[in-house]
Image (cartoon, rainbow, N blue to C red; front, side, top):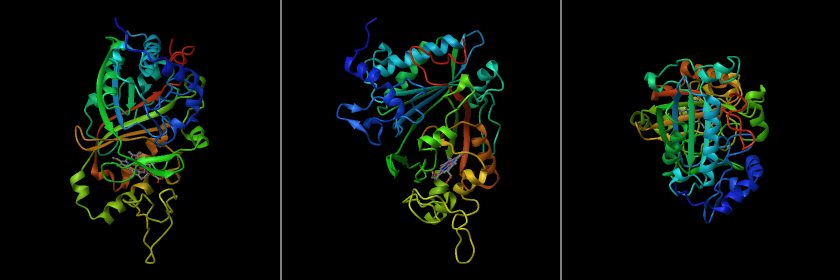
Length: 377
Ligand code: HEM
């Protein structure tokens, strides 16, 4: 078989700068960082997988693919093979890429609770998500054994990469559901942090563990050893009632979120980067950030959990909405937040969740440490 064109300079770049890229210290990782010959590549190898905090500014196109793994399949070799394929695809040396330039392609792979439980039911990632309010989820779109999240600046790349990985995975891996997503233009939040607007017009992804120390505390799993360097992903396809929301006066839309639509600033004042002041009141004693507003209901200190990293994508198929994606090192960060929102968050009546799953995002990998090798033989 003829192999896709190899680009030695690119391969050398990926080899030499893998560590620097993993640490996010090259200029190419800065928001808007691009090179005349295309977006900067992101190393697939290192202590952590790409596509969670790198590239810093998430690529504009995403494809999430969720699959089941047949009982007879040896999970260790399956994951090791996928990791190897990811390296070839990101390097542009895999023939299945059909000669497409991979650019800033990242692939992030996770395993579902059933596979984690088979290793050790006490491990993080072994628990399924419970049902929540405002759901209409077909059995096929709930859960799954394998997550493949593919992101790239070039919209054509993710479906080709997903096909290549399914091909590599073989007959024992059966696709369950997939979803594409797109990110709007990046709006600056604070140094090196940007966030896009969602289809409700609001800037989404402002609050989160953006600094390295916060990521160590709330995002990455510190242990036990088989999962150290991984994280827990939650993926929810949330269809949004755009017509009903758009019909509201802007002030009512802002009351739903608790932030200004145009600037992203909390309704308690300050800039987009300011912390919402949940105690601030009007002279007549009403909260500036309403009691049922999303930022109050979801606020980590009110819920009593750590910060989740939200890296969601907008979608227009099968309906306008948000493919909500969060990463956190404790599933309760998500479940306790949504439980609290379920009670009275003004945003939720505009949402219908039609797909839902959680995965253990595997620790990073390299040629010496194959993907999944800390968990599966
Ligand atoms: C379609 C559904 C959703 C939309 C459109 C949405 C949108 C937003 C927006 C615009 C903000 C304010 C800006 C920001 O901090 O990024 C926000 C904040 C937040 N959202 Fe959501 N969100 C949705 C669902 C969820 C879900 C399901 C969760 C988790 C269970 C969640 C958790 C949070 C958290 C933790 C914050 C930060 C609150 C703070 O501390 O200020 N959101 N969301």
